[in-house]
Image (cartoon, rainbow, N blue to C red; front, side, top):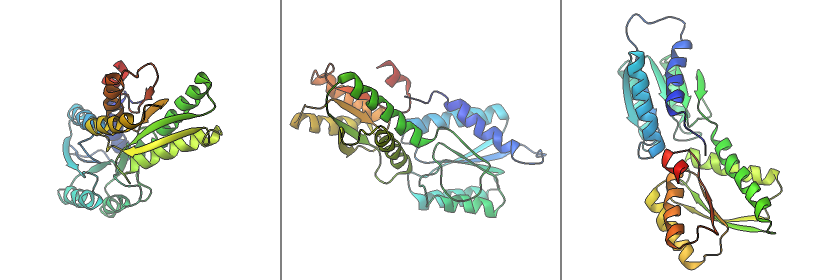
Length: 258
């Protein structure tokens, strides 16, 4: 639904690091960028934007992929700090455990900007990006409107979630459920929830398995666009496009055009 501002978000993160530092460095900066998981298309798009931003700003970009592993994330950050990075752009893999990486940067007095995924602890200059609960809340807004439009007493749907325990998935789930709670719709809109790891193929296979057993669903929503695109293939295959409504999160161009 939302998120065409990848380059703006990343350039903002890099630029704000400069704003948050009192002195202009005599040499070109080296910026460390820690990603949550580059296997996710949205994060891969962020990487491209970060590389372009660093090039435009004349800075060196040192990158690392946590692959959703907070121990690896901390080791990556410690390695970048040992290389003498001037600042750290940090996409947290975990709400709590990723705070250790921020603390490591704080200890070295290296300024931190968080982007996309935000950890709870540690000192940082700013956060750049959308609040993940807001993305989930947008799915809740969509389902609220769908409930009113369809006029049925109750709706049944499939909810494709990301990686179990991962920060973005938890935040988006909370945002969705809290929005429905605020609309007094938790008892009127029910979900069959399955984790599909933000993966299009898994989104497709999970949806196919569920719809093979039961086609009486009103909607499918997903915590990213790749999963909903996988689900869309199955809905079209089963010729259910007129009955099942779909919505995803992130605003990938392919999803916006689907």
